[in-house]
Length: 164
Image (spheres, rainbow, N blue to C red):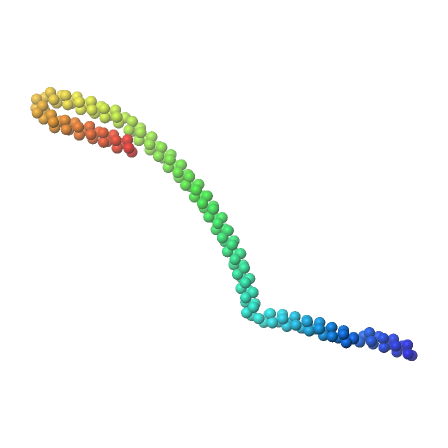
């Protein structure tokens, strides 16, 4: 019977943990308990959770701000390009209109020197006729001044049309 008892003793010794095993198990339990306590403290620490949430929201806001900035820059570039195109179009239109007005003014001013010469000739003819008349012979200075005024008026009109 000693053999069966010895097998039972061996089995009971194998089932019975040693003092070192018990100490190791206690240490593991303490570590798990410490981790659990830390987790509970973290959940209960409202201030730390609020800071974490604030940091998270701040990061999201920074991302959104960067996206908005990029979008604004793209829109600004698009608007600038559109404005430049419109300005170039307006410049071209203004140049065309200026050329039309210039051509029209030159066409109107082109026959003006001929009109001035015709007026001078007529004034000279009238002047010679007037000088022949006896009544007018005494008033020739008035007639000369009137002729000069007419010629000066024509020259002024011609220059104004030419400068337009």
